[in-house]
Image (tube, rainbow, N blue to C red; front, side, top):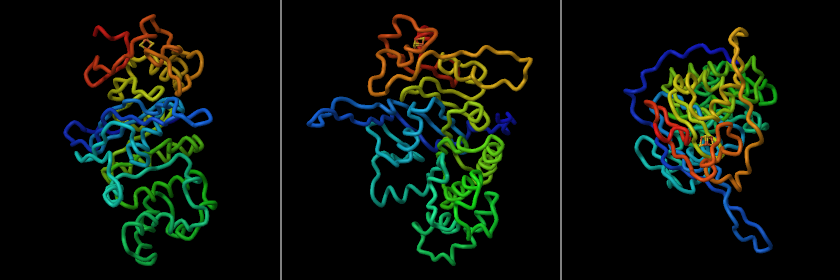
Length: 337
Ligand code: SF4
């Protein structure tokens, strides 16, 4: 488990907004029958909103299949949104295309879950890291090499690693290569999609600490996507909890971990191992599996698994509502607060 070494408290309230996502939707059409008629949609991301201030880390959590990775990819414009708006530094980037999108993309990069799958095994590490630079600057390998070697050193690799190939590295080192690649263009926002979940637990904290150091040094803003709440707690300032494509709770980290409001968040937090064996806490076991996103339940999408579900939860869709300062929840238990 990741040790909870408290991050130096950042005063983010004075920082400007970097990213604003409003009512984002990403639906995938479902076609069936001989004529492949459209018969519905998989609502992978269904009306989520979030904001990130410069220098902050927003942790997006939920079980696999909840839509958090699709949200990250849609925000980065790796796939087009079905509806909603994405503003980066106040500029609407939702429908950018062609050279305008290419130019804007320098400012936001992605670190992937599986560094091996995202690195071309036939390319030397130096060339892999410099690839984004060569795409944007008209310079030769020779001209870019000192910059690339500096980047390799900065992420904890050696200058000589420039000449090696991905298979010669461990999982943690490969993720460092992925991070160097993401940093090459000096971005402002990095979307890190499960960046340590494929790594041994012993290596995870090294990579997380590297990400934190780089954040301080380069004033980076992170959208940090993960299913492991202890990892998210270690990294984030704000947290958003997703379930079946919807945001069910959003708030400051301390508030969410101290007093989770949504029954789903309560269950997720109850599953975090407690480092102190004397500090006993009751684990909330959720019944059943996550429903098929192609036919989500009516009303509150969590009602089929919720230990607190009421009759009205089968009919009424709860809306996100601020019930404590900077802490919103979408649950009918709080509708009168
Ligand atoms: Fe549970 Fe109802 Fe709240 Fe949904 S609205 S989380 S079913 S209590």
